[in-house]
Length: 140
Image 1 (cartoon, rainbow, N blue to C red):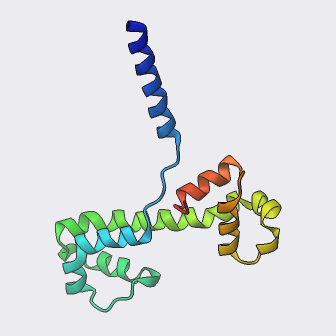
Image 2 (image 1 turned 90 degrees about the horizontal axis):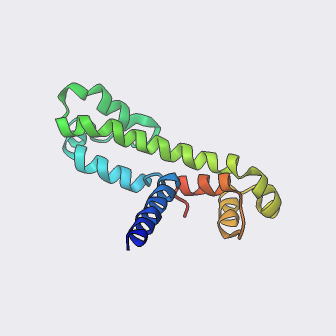
Image 3 (image 1 turned 90 degrees about the vertical axis):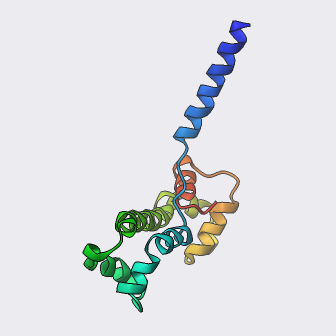
């Protein structure tokens, strides 16, 4: 009886360890912007109305107005922009980490990055680093 309990506890520990070693997917751009809208919607309307999201304009506007932002927005916007940067870096690293697989498996579509990603996603076997990069970029 005690042997069975020890086996169950050990197997649960291995499952938890395996899950901890798997790469965490990055947060999508949509999810990041949703978090920003909830935390900073009123502040954006007040201080940054009409500011374009691109080229860090909204981030710069919030940073310039940091002293007058609500506490929730002030605590959140840096984290959200960090998540967005992490997602962009993860997406940019996929082709770097999957370069050899792309050359072997996707030679026909080499000029179109989107097609290369689609090809890699449909491939039956890719390397661990490539698979990890795809997961972190949240392509799966």
